[in-house]
Length: 214
Image (cartoon, rainbow, N blue to C red; front, side, top):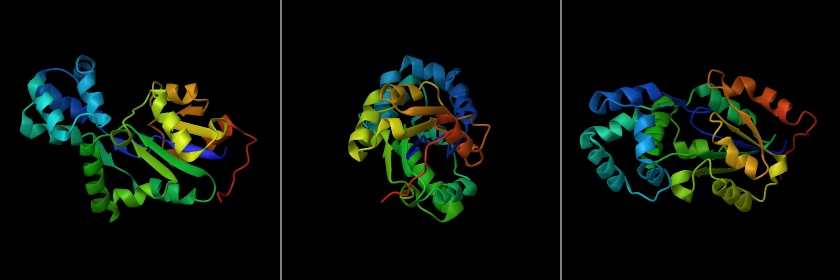
C-alpha cells in the first residue's frame, strides 16, 4: 500500500457525542442525530462552507437552542488528540504517502487548535503538516460520503485509488472511497489507531511494499 488516507475524528481525534446529545437534550428534548435528520441542509451546509458561522448560528437558534450556547455545545464533541497518536503519525513519515480528509467545521477547527496548543504546545496547522496533504470539508466544499471529495483529492495528488487505503470509523463514509476504487477499512474507535494500523494494512494488501516518497 502506497497511500494512506485517514479520517480525523474518531481516528486521531477523540470525540464525545454523548456530551453534545446531553446539551441538545437539555434544551430541545431530542438528540443530535434526530435534529440532524430534520435539518440536514443546515448542518451539511456548515460542514461544506456553504453556510457562514453567523448563518449557522442563526439557523440553529431558530431550532430552539440559545444562541449563546451553540458553540459551546458543538465544541463539547471535540476532546483532542492523544500524544501517542501524534508520535504514531511521526513514525509513519517516509513509509507511506499520508493524507487526511475530514468532515468538519470552523467551530471544531478552532477548538482543536486551542486544544493542540494547550496539551501539546503545537498548532493544528503543524499537525496537518505531518501529512502530505490534508483537506477539511468546509474548505473544499465537499463532505463524505459523497465521492466528489475523494475525486477532488485524487486529482489534487495524482494518487492511484487502487494503491490507496482509506480508514474511517463510519461505514457510511467509506462508500465514497469505494466508488472511487480505494481500499477501505472500518476503524473501531475502541481501538487506538496507533495499535491497529499495521493490522489494517496487512488485511488490505498483505503483499504490498512500502515506499519512500520522493
